[in-house]
Image 1: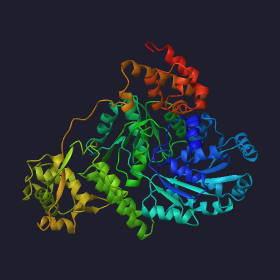
Image 2 (image 1 turned 180 degrees about the vertical axis):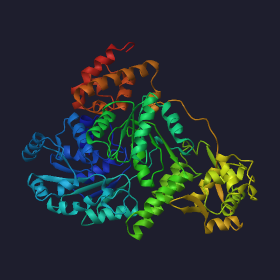
Image 3 (image 1 turned 120 degrees about the vertical axis):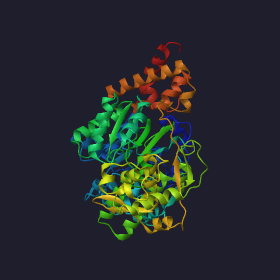
Amino acid sequence: MKRAAATLKSVFGYDAFRPGQAEIIEAVLAGRDVLAVMPTGSGKSLCYQLPAILDGGLTVVVSPLIALMRDQVGQMASLGVEAATLNSHNDPRDTDAAWDRLENGTLRLLFVSPERLAIGGFAERLARAGARRLAIDEAHCVSQWGHDFRPEYRTLAAAKKALGRLPTLALTATADDATRADIAAQLFDKPPLSFLHSFDRPNIDLRFAAKDRPREQIADFIAGRKGQSGIVYTASRAKAESLAASFAKQGHRALPYHAGLDQSVRSENQDAFLTEDGIVMVATVAFGMGINKPDVRYVVHADMPGGIEAYYQEIGRAGRDGLPAETLTLYGAEDMALRRRQIAEKEISPEQRRIEMKRLSSMIDLCESALCRRQALLSYFGEASERCGHCDLCRGEATNYDATIDAQKVLSAVVRTGERFGAAHLADVLTGEATDAIRRHGHDSLKTFGVGKEKSKRAWQTVVRQLYASGALAETSAEHGGFRITESGVAILKGSEKVSLRLVVETARRQSRRERGAAMAELDAAGNALFEHLRALRLEIARKEGIAAYMVFADRTLIDMARLRPRNADDMKLVHGVGEAKLARYGSQFLKAVAAFPGA
């Protein structure tokens, strides 16, 4: 692996492999079939990029998105590595040039979609051009048990056969036991060499909050992070556009992204997000798979995700550079009800419906957990961990309490009001709020009217939501909402079961802008100013070249540059992320910028 380590430094500018990369690359170079499960941001792409550079052959990379292919080709070009993509959006001249490089043996990486690889004769032509290896990114898409199953991935087994059963590397960030077994069965003739690395992303701060004026909650969160790149995920297209417009009025560079937008608008917005700093992308989950922007500083979920795998993959788009990043996930009883209805209405097998309901229950448990978020998240993937010490729960923003009496008050109110009203009405009954609806239905004469005056309406709504999440309450009807009591709820009401719920501790909403990580903390005031100066130069170069800003240099590289203040090319080689190709291409411009900066 000495040659691999030397190439890692000379091409990529990295001094050492990230955890897990070296052994996977060694297995790939040995021609083994490999299944690798590695967290987002751990450097999965390097596991096929470096072998392609080292052995001089062609690696065919299957990717689900054209934008991702284009992004990776651009990144490889910036490192001086021959790469191309063949897809339906290619200019005919680009397609001809790609085939020329394929047939003359100079191409090292070819990115294609599973649909393109399945076209008759295409795989055979790649085999004749000398394809040496197959890499399958987002491999969980091949599994019906995966959270993002794509039927077109099922064609890969036939395509692999047409390629000549090449050694194959399957990569994913999210796969439980059932999904891993299905990937292996679908893609490999015999069990592959499997690598399962820690799912832990210790640089990502995890925070959840029940919805309470959610638009304001999100606005407060991003206000203290202005100038940082972030993603806000929403459950609907209309909400993506509405929130983007609202944030833009507040002075943010906010852009919408969803499948309903014109393709040119989507591409323009995505390119802006990748190229520029400080953009807030407000999007449905149509945005993000494979987005290789390393300096996304936060991810917000405006609505509860449908499962932990999707949640984990989406928050993994933050902090890919290893520097601290933040997440905020908002959730409510209406989210839980919506997700349950969506699963119930799907045309899927009973077994698939059972699995999806189980995944949703795990997501709800994570939202309502009173343990360390990281412990709860990692335990879902079968991994034990210590308390992280810095998620919202470790910071003491919520604790558990014996809520049996509170639960009985709510459940009694549900029964006495006829099991057809929602959380707001139930809270009015318990606090003794004589609204028009309360008087109209005669609920001001109930025994439960006003029995909970010691708590706020918001506090009772929190209890209702948690009882729904725990299964003590269920929806009365999908059309009209409202809650009914379940068998579990009856047991609590009768006193045969106790219940523990979360007591949320009210804390001031944080407004301060986070630092860009531990490396940033090493910079003094002049170093911070130099960093911003180098960022401006990076953006100027990126715009001129029409590439993403991080393809010039990532934030981590600029931070290191501002700390070391290199004076010559030898000094610049010591900066993290500066390889030979980037030194030759950008070194002189950044050396001049450092030298010209006051105090350098």
